[in-house]
Image 1 (cartoon, rainbow, N blue to C red):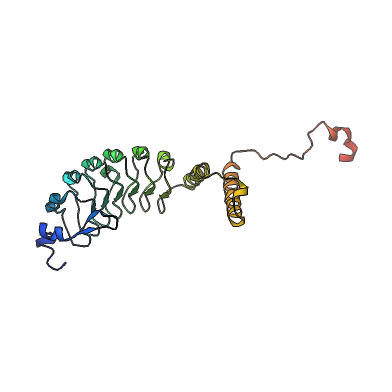
Image 2: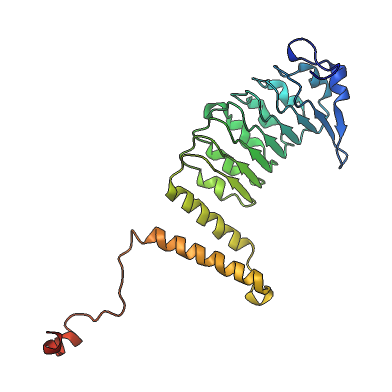
Length: 254
């Protein structure tokens, strides 16, 4: 229990919440209520809706109310490590959000509202460590996304629209029941996209960097060859066609 902080059943007062507001290094107001033993979303903090960042992580919260949309200036929302199984549709109204972390909860695919697609400014979205067996294709419309966490879920496939987001730098899909082919294709697609973004001439690279690029390309070509070997016939370019030289020297062949 935080000293003087919580009321009955893991609740806090407005006075305590005000004392939990901190100023970040870039001058933003952060309301930090992490690790407070909260069992419900504290309604009193709706009176502090002018904060820029809200941290409710590592509590015992099961439900986020629709009133979360009152945080009109929110750019950073951390809800990780709670017991949330559904996000409110109104979360899509917080269009200022740059960062949303709901990892390590009880989220199912039906608990992801379509309104997430309205978060046009979001850059980091962490949905890892939940119970998702699919994710909405509409997440592929969030063109500002830099990082997406989908690790430790129940996903059999990742929408291609997500792996092709123009600004995506990190896509974590570890520990999902994805097929090997799916993972290989995702890897190739992401490498191709990055190559297009960072094309340089060999003369502009130092020796170690050039060698690193060459090794990466060899790895790509090897993976491509493995993927295509099952679908293409093997061609032996040095074999002589029948009825040509062999026909002219039949005795030698015998």
